[in-house]
Amino acid sequence: MGEEIKFGSFEQVVLPHLDSAYNLARWLTRNDQDAEDVVQDAYLRALRFFDGFHGGDARAWLLAIVRNTCYTWLQKNRPQEPTMVFDEEIHSEEGSSLSPETLLLQSADSQLLRQALEELPLKFREVLVLRELEGLSYKEIADVADMPIGTVMSSLARARARLRQCLTNCLTKEPQR
Amino acid sequence: MSCKDTQELLDGYLDGELDIVRGMEIESHLRRCPACSQVYENHQALRSAIRARAPYFKAPAGLHQRVRSTVRQASKAEPASRVVTWRAPWRPAWNLLGLAAALVIAVLTWSISARLWSPSADELLAQEVLSSHVRSLMANHLTDVPSSDQHTVKPWFNGKLDFSPPVKDLTNEGFPLVGGRLDYVGNRAVAALVYQRQKHFINLFIWPAFEGPGIAEKTVTRQGYNLLHWTQSGMTYWVVSDLNRGELQQFVQLVRSSAPLPTSP
Image (cartoon, rainbow over all chains, first blue to last red; front, side):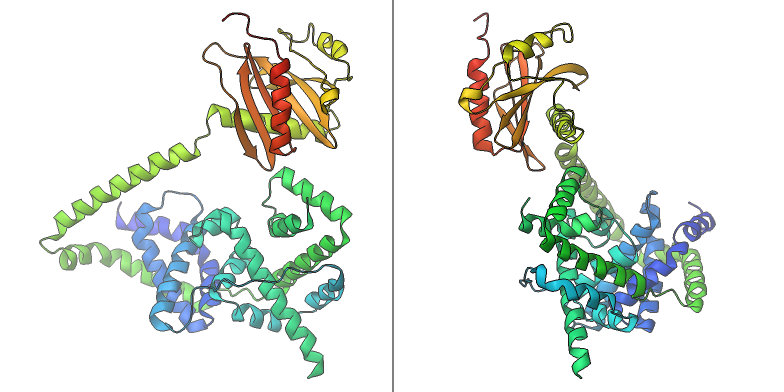
């Protein structure tokens, strides 16, 4: 493939997904500058692997590369930050007493949501961002986050339970302060 | 479906990732169970809060230009750097070895996954039988001839099928005959007999078997349904129900023992 042609189609196919790439990198690194660096690095990797891209969903393909670049970057630059999640029991919800929770969740503002999401463990943040902000299907999430498709739903369930817990805790404490 | 099962599948339901049967089961549970529908409301509230108000970080204006020019530079520099700096004397052989290994792995993965994922004729039939069962319960079209009388149901198939299915009422054994229905499975018209066990319906599909060795009993579980099939006296039988496997097995034994004996040894 001639380099000009290659760059031309790379530009058409992969560059339009820059926002998605940056959004994911920003959520995973939680820092503007780091996200920019990771995205730039990811695009270089994507260019190198572009010969191996044979059509299909370019956004999911790119996000997988961004995600891997993030992990490599985090391991190198923030080794103290855990990338794994401890398997913890999340208490099953009891329905009837939760009616006020719906109202609470509806009142969560942008600032609080951002804070709560950023405090989630990396793996949880990742699936939630891919699902809710990027709108990926379970199959695409499985490809991007390199997990069996069977565990996507349970990861999302645990991530959401954790986020709900965190939001309701914050929102119920707030008025007392 | 229990509350526990429902809540375990709620995220899949919310994300529209469940198959239609599961989805309908959840819906009907949510209609009946205020506790679970409250939990579902919380799920929805969380989702709409995230989608409406969690920040989406758009790439800063400068980044687009930066990435574009970096990529352009790299795509020009890449071939040169590959040739000049990366090629050590041992490298070509190493590359070949790596390529060979990659090929072997690729072929292995492909053959294994092909074996795992390409559905066999049996699996396709199982899917058809299951869909047919679900449709019969869904569309209010369980039977064409509602009758518990085997002497009404069996003659009803005359002229509608090119074979005469064995029909036996099993009321005394705890599986009353509900009726019969014409159905279409595996590219042919087949007889569907409907039996009932308490609140569970059983569809028994019958059609002439292909020539060849008969199939001993086989069991499959799909989406919470049990399916059993076998051939006997030149007929293929498929049984499907949400009934537990033990009782369904019992039903199968009853059907088997009431079916006509093979005509030739």
